[in-house]
Amino acid sequence: MRIDSINNEFKSLISDPEKYNTMILNLSDISDESLQSQIIRQIRAKILAGELASHSSLPSIRQLAKEQRISVITVQRAYENLMQQNLIHSRRGKGFFVSDLQRNKKKDMAFEHLKENLQKPLESALAEGLDAEDIMQTFLKVLEEIKK
Amino acid sequence: MRIDSINNEFKSLISDPEKYNTMILNLSDISDESLQSQIIRQIRAKILAGELASHSSLPSIRQLAKEQRISVITVQRAYENLMQQNLIHSRRGKGFFVSDLQRNKKKDMAFEHLKENLQKPLESALAEGLDAEDIMQTFLKVLEEIKK
DNA sequence: TATACTGTCTATACGCAATATATACAGTTG
DNA sequence: CAACTGTATATATTGCGTATAGACAGTATA
Image (tube, rainbow over all chains, first blue to last red; front, top):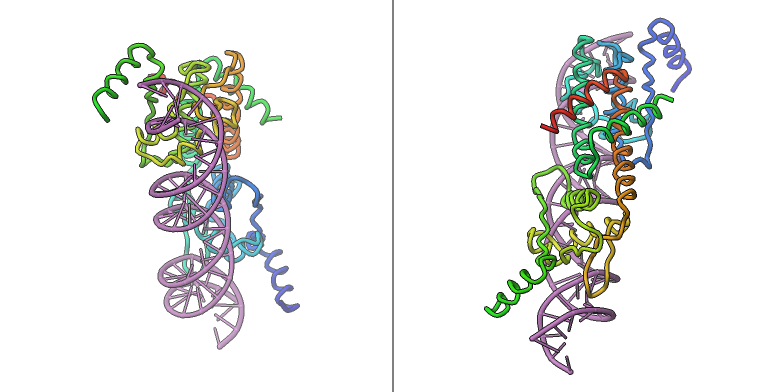
């Protein structure tokens, strides 16, 4: 990369902060969760929590792959999944962008996601002999621990 | 199988009900959950809920594989997992048996399992912008739906 | 004691998902 | 035109779940 190219990057950073698009992700190789899944989950959370605004741009698949030192395909698959969830969309030659979702819609999606995620754990707990009160007690305990 | 062999099977069924050891499992080929995992989860639940008493025998790996029309290896892997969880143990030449666990211990294991299963869903929900009240509301809704 | 069960161990193989590498094509922007 | 973008295709590796097969070892019983 040449000097003037770097200068241009700094200029655009000053004039257009959105362009210096370093996605902050915590990816772990040793997790039991796949890289794709970690990317999907973390970007999804940022969008639903309003941390990534509608219409803002995401890093290009090549850039994100480089940053995170993972394969382009892995990022592409993750972005494809987020597109299927209608959370982001692509424009050929331009990049990927956060879709325009109303705040209510985002909250609904988070609710729906949680419902799905709770289904199996609660079914299992009942099948293993716990009752509603047991479950509630555990639920509150876990919630407290996380919030600390 | 010859006639007297069948007769013997009926005799032993009458004299020793535990010997007619048909494990009732609901296995689905089209589930997103692997066969191994389904076996582990269902037997685990039966043990923790007290439905399978301590010291009672489990079907042999070959018998269960035959019944469910799946591979012996699949059943063996599932049993190995249950042994690692100290829920069952094996006796060479005799079979697999439910381990002796106190009722309190079983409940503790169910609690621990639920805690682990709730960890990620609750973390996700908070990351996606839901608060404790939102989560509690969803939690109660799912619990009600399951209990119906 | 023979046989028919048990669990255990080993080897080999197949399909699939996640991941990776590489190349080519097509649209956008400066 | 150059340097970015997304898209598409082909090929390869790795690990998991699953499968088939055989051999070995302990137990129960007719």
